[in-house]
Image 1: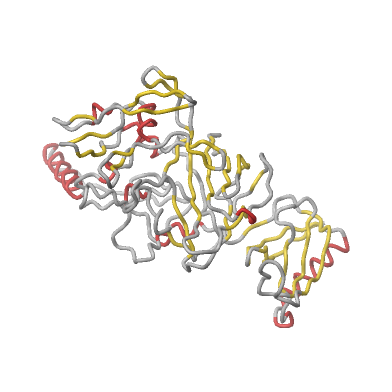
Image 2: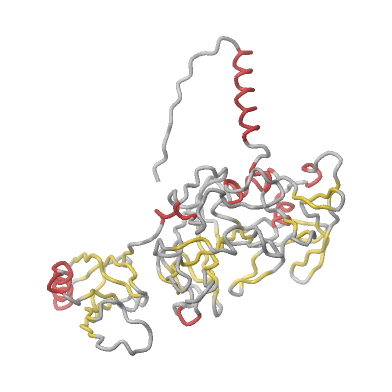
Length: 432
């Protein structure tokens, strides 16, 4: 992605002291405009609505894979010292129990107390660097959004990492839901990866970055019967369909991103490398309400009631944007390509669905031309709508090209998109 470069031309200052004064005024104004600094209140820990402190779970499983929400533990392993972050005259909260691989140990949460009320410490430098550049060397996660349609909004309950009304008040992922309560949508891979694990309603993919670092993406609350029958280790391409969320009030996709943290010793206990869930949106930085240091509300105040975050620019984020484009809506994988190399057509078929009373939901176009490609098992086939085909010359032209390719053994490559869960052909390339 091309970066905008802005060149500044400065005229010489009259003196060093004048320059220093100007710089002091400039940075002073910046610090006052961000009072308190937004990134200071990242969710290392969070108070529950009942006044007790929540520090993160251990070994919560997603699709059978243990993932960590506990960023106090991650911060300790990265080398941050909570005592150095402690405000003058304040005391840290007591150490609490953690449990890893069946071993219980004490660890220090990044939180302090004032007359019994508990607050987050500022984020430490090492955790801040990790979240700024989790893969190292400024390598982007290079994700696209995990669905094909723009009729998606952030979920009402999981729209931020720290919830504003639940007792637990913590949510290590981002919820996406359809704009209509009875709707559903297809879910697709956010990047090329392999299947690491799946359960009845959850899929976890493993990815390698350009500098060979591993990270995971999590797709939870899928309709079990919709999950594609991938096997462990199966290669899944960016934008390839994984499954769909179920219809129904409150149905949504819980999407998460997890990265490996370092191994280390905490209170004489060896902690192995673990996967930690992070927030790839940077909601914790730019969307926090700066007028209320205790609300832990990381959502923008100026969005409509739909919380349509997808079209909102992330201009205020202090962290690296790990998505391909900004705003996020432009990262939708609307159009997909079948894999290289070009493939032979192993079967063609014309189908007419004359009755709606069949199992499942037929696509809008009931007359279809179907194509199966050699070596492609997902999707099983591709289709061209044929209803009222006399008015669709391009559709008929593509049918002719595909028929000729099938009869003469030519190899093809297809561009397609999902329409009502079926891959509709948009374009055809042919080679001998």
